[in-house]
Length: 213
Image (cartoon, helix red, strand yellow):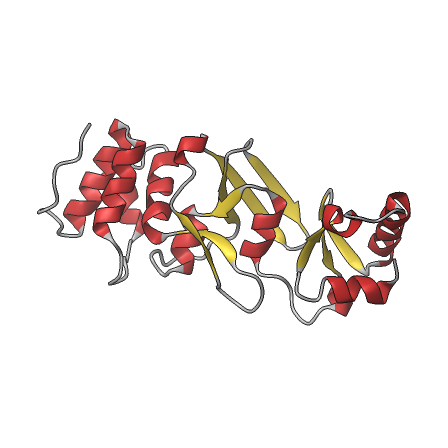
């Protein structure tokens, strides 16, 4: 494979896999050796085994962290603080991109940042969509309601008033409070239900039906 061919293939793919490049090729080992040479020369950057991006001198901009996260672990979707910060629901800067996966939990340090993957069972892997957030391919991102439920479910002590006040939640006008409650009921658990009840009270949503324990 020539360098110009790789650039042509990956023009619309800021993050790409070796499996994609190797599909249908007769000289698999040859392509792998070429990828290793390009990594050593800095033309491409290996983010993890089998996942790459074009090196800084040869790209116009770095791929969005959410897109990188989607490629580092499959299946996964960006959620928790990363998704909440993206939609303006929490004010603080989030130094790592956090995702939900059905695989094992993992923390990765890459040339493009730090990525955290939190595990949930398959039954809880829902409430996300493929969304365009910048130029380039769309990304798998939690809907605001599910991102908040994911955070409450996975965070120890999330049902405490102190923790909820520290979040300084600012739900947008389009935040679907009924969907938020449905997601929580689908997951269940006393801690999550207590946290949701307190958030509903804090938001003045006292007319919502009582959550099931």
